[in-house]
Image (cartoon, rainbow, N blue to C red):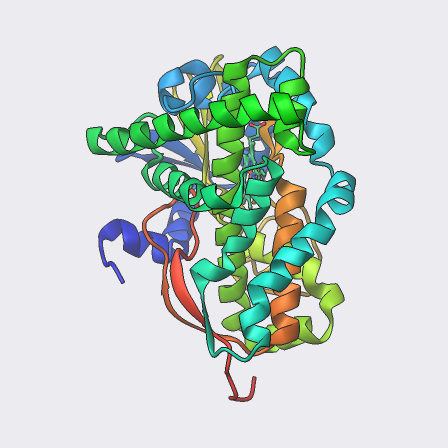
Length: 389
Ligand code: HEM
């Protein structure tokens, strides 16, 4: 396992987040030159700012922050363009749409993925388990099997290097190469979708009369990237949280109806998205300070999700905790559009694993170095565990 300072922070950011939260509601990060909000209410106020003109996603103010997206997508746009793009996709991502269109397929993919466990193999590489979100997001956009590895690689490279405009030359070169490949590939995809019209999200997008081809490519690319890595990491975090607490794991394994709440608790307690950035657009007061246009603020989701003003004993992982919405999918206009899909995948994956191997083990878990999408990147799931839970 790597021991660089970044990797050590990513492996266990919670003591550091706790120190930051203790330092106050608003803390200056001199290394990143950003302010950090640590309280749930302050983060929620910024993310749901009803005026909608006082804070912006960085990419809408300076395209440099998402230089790898060639056109307005969702995460780099505000105002009428954002609403137009979101309106086109939102009906296809509701809880109901996901259940109807995707639940049976997600369960099939989970069953295939867990076949080795059922057939008596003694371990499963985390990478094998993580094929669930690869296959699902790829099928959502109509990416054929033979391109799944490419798309996993594109997503890895972008997420690993993501720094909202602060990427160094090496990172930019790597990201640029991936974007060139992905753009060429998406152009082919869009062409055949216009022709053959398969029943998937890319056909929905090519049919939207008010979307440009560049917007389709940028939104498709951001869904490929946002939809795989974060979900894979949430599945990994769910494995870690339950394995680390055999008593709670037993509760969930014996009563699968607890699973949706347990997974909300995993997202609160460990969630992959540790921070989301905003830029101040109009002078505004927040968390006791007056901010000037151009200042950057992070909603520190990892700290806010353990805010003792909202959750009693927030440092405890408790699958029976009364569920209150947390910030693991963000909030407000940019709240994760794929939230219901991610929930469906994580719940189905964990339900099936707990049914087949309720006392699975974990080893060689490595969190890599990505803070913005944090979670296990490598590791092994032991399937032949005989020790009592
Ligand atoms: C556990 C899995 C996931 C987590 C933790 C997660 C987290 C987030 C968060 C925190 C945001 C808000 C970003 C901000 O406010 O700046 C977001 C936005 C977004 N997510 Fe997810 N996400 C997950 C899965 C997915 C999936 C499965 C998809 C698509 C298939 C997806 C697509 C998006 C998109 C397109 C946005 C931008 C929405 C907008 O700006 O309007 N995400 N996600």
